[in-house]
Image 1 (spheres, one colour):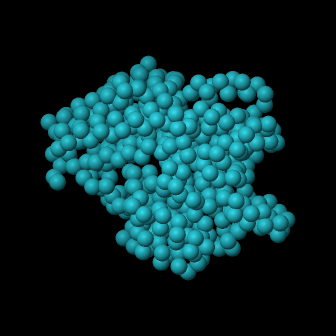
Image 2 (cartoon, one colour):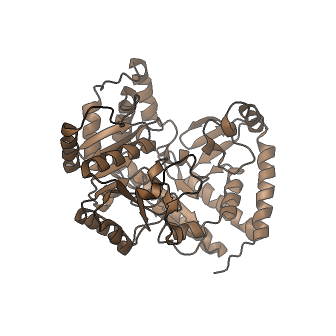
Image 3 (cartoon, rainbow, N blue to C red):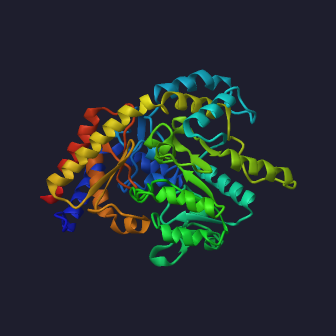
Length: 451
């Protein structure tokens, strides 16, 4: 299907919206100039300039789904820190826990009284019995890869093409066009990562089976739904086949649920009845405070204990000083109790369905060759008619200029969606009015692009 949106229309909208952004945000512009004197790329973390705006938008405060910027402009936030604030900004349960526990010590490098309860809650929600806490999901993934290599005696891992597992070096390998190579933009990596990482396409059972057949892969590290290249859904039966093939080859299956925690109170794996050897997640698990967790099955944990009984002296390379801190456990407890329940997820998923249908209706109304996908409380649209089957297909159909034009249009009208892709989250503070505002904004945007 030919798109009714011309390149000229996209270029004109981007130019107009960037000028409008500049006019609306003089205080942010001034702050950007001051910050550039001391911060690399002008921001505390360089991803903060990846929104495509002429300068970063500086935030004054955020609560629930409401953001107020340095110029007093108000926004409805559907990005929610790219899942870091999945349950809203400063949700009351998290604020209460911070107020109650903050005065009692933040970190001691000793377990707190919450440790036993948090471990039990993690097992109850996610089904695995043994856990560890880290500061980020990237840290958790690094630790899991080390454990898997240690207990299997195998050096290789397997990931899916265009996967996302945080800033874990081993996963920055692609196989576009069949050529396995390191990601071109990877900074300062001296090793040839292709010697340790196999890459196949998501949903390709034959390629997966062939890659695992030699019996040299310690683990498959995978999202159950690919989420950082648009959303790529598993084909019917693929994840079940993944479990069968990993077991057959003696390969551990680790599911990274950092983005798919929005699927339900036990994540996607629990919802789909999957039985991984390990789970990893971070971002929202402590309400936005740096914390992540990884868990293992009883069998994998037994193998770890056996390995440790034979390990020599020296540092393990696993763990960081602030991991498992008192404040992390207090906040994880509050989040698991308050939000990881069936009752909490029902309204989130209902509103996500409403958003999904509303976007689909707008797509049909304007006759654009787009589609929309939903997984739990997570919704995303892509500027192509068919859902991609794998990461390579998804990478070829992403239309950056249109995405950027839509983002800018919505941002200037008080609606925030995720800058790296067109992802939107529903949180407990999201209302039907918020959803309708987003749908209406997208409708107006497409009307202008077509005209």
